[in-house]
Length: 71
Image (cartoon, rainbow, N blue to C red; front, side, top):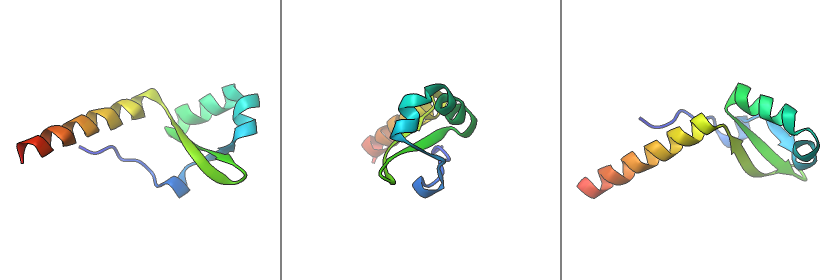
């Protein structure tokens, strides 16, 4: 049931300036890979995910919360 997500260090990376200046390229990469790590000075600051991945995460989170209430 949990979303099958890659580890943070396995995500494709784009620096913040590239994201700002080449948004269309970044969108294509996110659609292709599902998520992209956004870096600033080589440190990952956030992860950009596509809508389908986000939906899986929220669905899984709600299911886990519901299961915890049953215990």
